[in-house]
Amino acid sequence: MTLATLTAELHKVLPEAQLLTTRLPELPELELLLLDPANLDRAFASEETRRLLENPPYWGFCWGSGLALARWILDHPQHVRGKRVLDFGAGSGVVALACKLAGADRVIACDLDQPAQMACGLNAKLNDMRLEIAADYFAVSGPLDLIIAADVLYDADNRPFLDHFVQRANAVLIADSRVRDLDHFPYRRQQILSGRTSPDLGEPAEFRQVSLYTADTLITGT
Image (cartoon, rainbow, N blue to C red):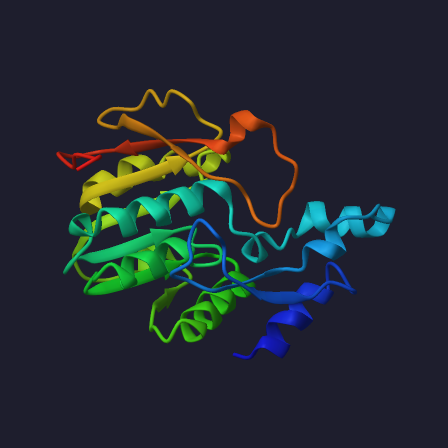
């Protein structure tokens, strides 16, 4: 697992794109390998657009919900300290890394996409951390104290996981910028967080407001 290997995966979609080591102002504690914004600030050829739609390198972005949840965890480390945590749909691994930095005992970054798994591992190495990497949520063994997920509810196929999560772990944290009012017992919205995607995709201001949902007695804001 090397940067060259991950870059080769990126070039299957965007042949001229590069990954840059990035430290976001809102999250100075962590560094991430993110897409070079200069390569995104242009018109895409039709073939590039097709490849982006079919196989988007979402792991090369720090999405607004992931940024907001990572920031919240670092500001409230008591909710993850000493716990066994699974990050579902980990992407770049930003939230998993925040949990590890906040003192979680075991952190599993789970993502079906192989390049995302590589990105999680490389970002962990970049920050001198170690994450467990999993491709299959259902293959993860052992008890879990907390399951976290950011920006996964846009895909209706992921909604059934909400029920799995509460059966599997003692607590669940969901951050989502697209779903304003999740009507799914026992989840409830605790607060609105602020987060913007990097590199900037020019998302509407409303998508920079991230809803934080919990499914247990976890109390936010303290």
